[in-house]
Image (cartoon, rainbow, N blue to C red; front, side, top):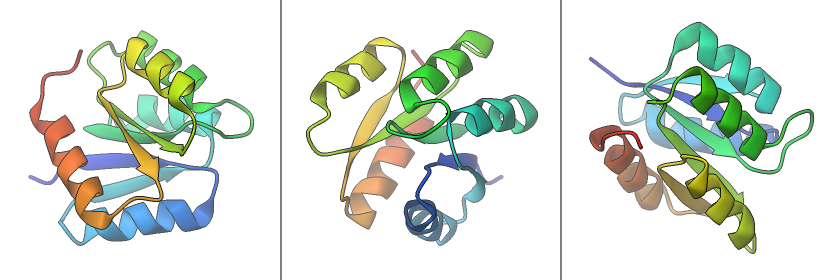
Length: 123
């Protein structure tokens, strides 16, 4: 059975890029456009993994991460951030994110990190 991944980013081209990389590998992709949308969709579909951008309107990725983890402590969340957001990355890991990808990223790095997150036990 294929894993369902919720791809969250306010930039449509980033969602499309991640969706294309992961769907080629057989993953089922759902999308959300901001943190608020991500929290709602997570509750609705309970994906196997969430890729979550940090900087978004309405609700940022850190707040969305905290809300998702509050509703499901076993949620697997992979943060996606732009270069230079080290403080945010540390805060995300402390809040329960499993790992992070730094934009711009290589498709192989995305697949490697997603597989690693799906195989590991949520923290």
